[in-house]
Length: 290
Image (cartoon, rainbow, N blue to C red):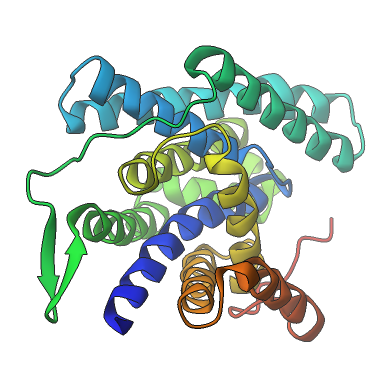
């Protein structure tokens, strides 16, 4: 029982972590928050369902196509919303409100295209479950954890050991100094938003086979991802995954051993506790003040 609960919590936590990672990347690159992240997850789940179930594409192809569309969407939002508003020198809160507007537009667009019915995402693997320490675990759950870990490792390598990743980090640290060194900070910021959207869409495709696909799938996940990012250290890439997994485990353990009625109370109570006791999160990430 405990192993199954821990695996379920890890799956949920990895999804929270991917969303939290998107929040942290955008914050580091631009000092902004994109509250449409959760709804990009919903869009990714619906796109994956369309390609994989309705059009009959192989899962890997459906996965790649969904990521490409999400990547383009994230880049488009950065170009059409964030950059345009920033050029007008509006207050940062107006940009945050604009991302909330994008969130509702996405929800309504998904509702118009795919209706409000819950859709059953087909199984990815022919084998239903695998034995882990004598407990049967859904294959898709193991796949979700594995992909999340690989994604984290790949992003770490990209940010630390690639020229463009180094340019992105330099732009996030000091955009003016990076520009003086010949770095295209505009492109770096746009790619950061695109990667964040890709991570959210990936989370949607991983979660679809486990929980199904529906309009409000990403709204709750998005809020929990934000909470995980704050708990880990808002803006810290590693803290995002750790905070997301920690929140997923807390929520699942609460549901299993206490009551599902209190899972949100405990989860958001933990968020408040971190804000009061350690606002810089587990990884002690300092907030951007300028």
